[in-house]
Structures are given as structure tokens and as C-alpha cells.
Image 1 (cartoon, helix red, strand yellow):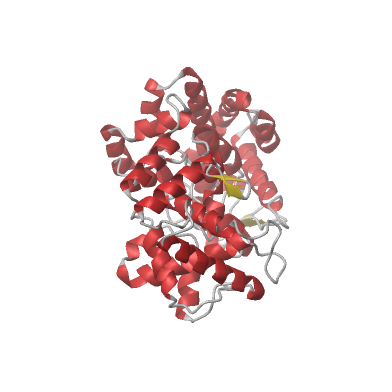
Image 2 (image 1 turned 120 degrees about the horizontal axis):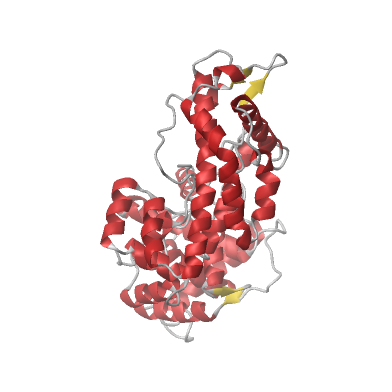
Length: 434
């Protein structure tokens, strides 16, 4: 399977655009979003929703249009620097498990060890996407945790619960208590940071350790945990409810632990799903069948090419995986486009993959596959990416060293893409449900 995007990945640093060489990912991601609304593959811990809500409270005292001295960085982003630094400073020696899945952890570690304050240069390049606000924003909006730049209805309920269970009275619901002092300390710190566009406190500031104790990902209190679970699972018969309840089954947990196969999990889900969810699962099945044919054929080409100084089309046409895909791809194309049409994805699918609609000879199929890869790379933002091989004037192909394959595709009946089981399993573990 293709690895989910890492928190700190920035495709602009890769000249060959190492992810998604065939342009298959966007449609799969849209199907996954329909299956599990709000969730993204990088999400790991529900406690970051509470951390976001706490930051909204602190930053609510700033004017809506205020920015730091660089005229870009907003208070919530500065709060994120403080929160990430706080967690790293506190748990780097106390309990490193609290740092697993923390967006920006590598940047925080590097800055801390170099005694450098986090700022736009030392933090994530695309912090609005890959920081914890960016990673969890879609779910925060879906759950009504946030509403534009203020707490939403669920955010209000969650922060009141957190405040009470953490003994932080005064942080939000009343003007008195120890929580008021913590909130004020971070408001003042962020206010100072607006002038310098960097963390404006010593790296061992006591308030860092206090905040970290209250937002630690694995230290969710009982009522907060129940509140998060009930909100995340949603209404009975909603897609997210059905998916989560299926994941909680012991037989599904065994499948996940033994094989990691979302396809097998979806087969079990299909047996009890509502009719509309069955339609969506059929669309996923058909799209992934199409994606698997293309991906295995492409990987097989790379494998064969890796053992040669140069390769011609005729050197590839006798490979079993390549030949099998060539014979099936046209029929799979038709089934996939029919299945995804009711979700508004047929135009996008046709635009990307129409070259595979008609059955052709195996050599022509291989050439179409290579041309598709070259077009996909050329169209990647911002200025295109280099193909994974060079096409010579005499129709030979030379694979670049970084794209060589030591093994041929396994032929396992697995999805090419991910459909949110990984983040859901992680959430359910944190919430004590599995």
C-alpha cells in the first residue's frame, strides 16, 4: 500500500514527486472523506481537538485581524509553537510516548536542542497544513468544535469539561481560579511573540510544563473521553458510526492486526451497512480494483527496468502482472467510472484516466501507462516533476536510481490507498474503546 502522507512531508522538496506517480490518490481521498467525514489520514490523537479548543480560548482576546510583525503569522499559529514546544520540553525525558504522532515534533526537537525559539523559519514550512491545527482542522469544523475563529457549540462543551476535570477553574467558564493564571500567562506570551514572530519565553519556562501536563495526548480524563467519543461516532446509521462500530468488533481487530487489510474490513462492514453506504463501498471496491491494476503494472515495469541498463517496451510485454493488467484495465475502467459517478467523480476520473478506456495490445498498453505517468508528473504543482525514468530518442527507457525496485509486486489483494482505518484505530485506542 502507498504510505499515508507524513506530517512534515513537503512535496516541493522532491524533484521526482515521489508520491502518487500515476495520479490515483485524489479520487481515493475524496472517497475516503465521504466514507469517514472530517477525518484525514494524518490524524492520530483526539486530545489535539481539546488542545485546539484551549488555544481558541487563549487567542479569543486578540483582535480578529491582528498578525505578528511579519504581517502573516496569527495568534493561533504562535499558540501552536508554544503548545508543541511545551509537549516536547515536558515529555522528551518524562514520557516520550506522549510525543508519538505530534505534528512538528522533529522541528521542535531540533530547535530545542539548538536552543532556538520556534518561529516561521524553524517550524514547519507549511504549518497551516501540517501543524496540528492544519491536520485536525477538518474534524474540528465537522464536529462544530470551532466556528471560523471562535469556539463552536461542541468546543464550548468540551473546554468546560476539560477545565473542570483538569482543575483549571477560571480558564474559561469563570473569572476566578488557577486556570485564569495559566490562560493569562499564555496570552501575555503570545502577545509578546507578536512583536518578534517567535516564541518569547525561555525554553524552560515553568508555564510550558504546566500546559503540557494539561494537554498530554494520552492523559484524557474520563468525562472528556466519553464526550469526544460520543461526538466523533455521530448519529446512529451515519457512515462514521457504522465504520467505527465495525472497527470495534473483535474479529475486525484481529484482521487489522494480522493483515492491515482495509478491504477485508470493508467486506465485513458491507454485510451490515445501510444501502447508501453499500453503494459507496462498491465505488471504493471498483476504484481500488482499477488503481491496483495500474499500480502493480507500473511497479512491475520498474522492477523489470531495475535489472537492465536500458529497457524497451518489448522487454516488458511478457511480464505476468503487466500483461494481466493490460487485458483487464479497460473493463475495470468502465466499472469504476460507473460506480463513482453518483459521487460527482466521473468527470475527474475521465479527465485523468480516459486513455485506458479502450482495450489495446499489451505493447500499446505499456506505452499508454508510461505516457500517463509522464503527464501526471508534468502536471504536478508548482512547476511539474521529473518522470521516474528517462525516455531516449530511440524508444529506450532508463530508470533513475532512486526509483529502482528490488522486488516485484506481491500480488496481494489489498487496496492501493488508505481509507481512514489507521486514524480511527488510533483514536479508539486513545478513547479506551479497543
